[in-house]
Image 1 (cartoon, rainbow, N blue to C red):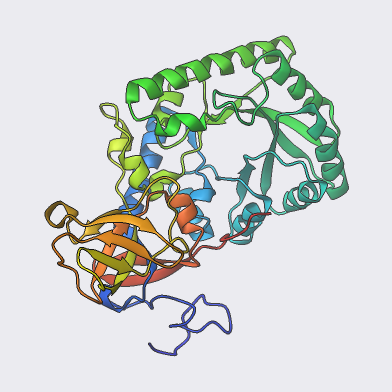
Image 2 (spheres, rainbow, N blue to C red; image 1 turned 60 degrees about the horizontal axis):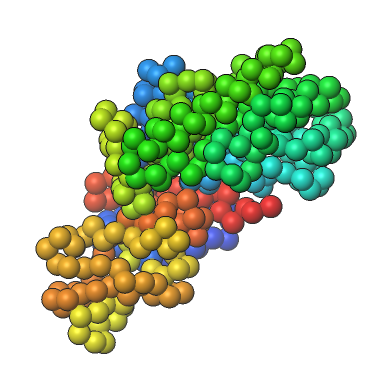
Length: 389
């Protein structure tokens, strides 16, 4: 590879050592394992989601945890997104550092040090936080006062996942009242995200789950009204369910995976007209056959350090598995074992796969190789990669 510096790389990074490809290269020149982003398809996904959300009359706030890239976040905001969601303070810091002006921290935070970091970040961007427990309020109030900022805060309710979130109704309203009364905090609305609905395969069952969540939201709205608290912002919803939330009473949706899609979302059935059936798989794992030591099996160079397997194996797209019987059987740290029943693969052959789950797969890579057609157009840094604090 050329040793010429690549625009955007930090000093000291070496093309060919730190990056899998350079702009202008062909697909055949990309070093593997590499995570490819088809820019035409990703841009189409971003535009489709923005248009659909606008037509439905809801704001769009994509989850940055799907891409962990400030560049992609800026693309989404340029297309009309209100801002992004982040799960970690460090992820939010990377987004703000990368030019993202509006972040909702959708995860519960209890460590005073992380609260202090989030409050300091609010000096640079609009930062909103959440709470699902009265015990969180004093810490957030102290952090806001120390940073000399006012933090907008949402009360999070359990929308049906039985994980995070206060009980809807009176318990959630009590938290909202405490927020409203706390110095440095401003009650801004409600988070009601039903994560378990995203991969309920049948659309009728997904819709029923969200309708049950809507009842929880309405119950909480009733108690907030009794307490004299307005709730103009209700956020939740994901790629698999957002159109059901958009029917009300949600005002904002938090879709994330739509920008890439993955093999797990391919298993969801779309309701008639649902955008879920129109988003394209734009993210691909490129891997090379590195061993053909025994018949019927090929070993590739993309193992668990290159892809997540907790939502199932990736789907091989090229060569066409429908004609070849190629299938990923499993992964070790640095290897993927591929069934090759007709022994069509040879050493050095390339396979293109759709990851099983896009979010954790992206977090294993420093760079997305942005391709357009058969050429590398640019590299996109995964700017919040590994930011777990």
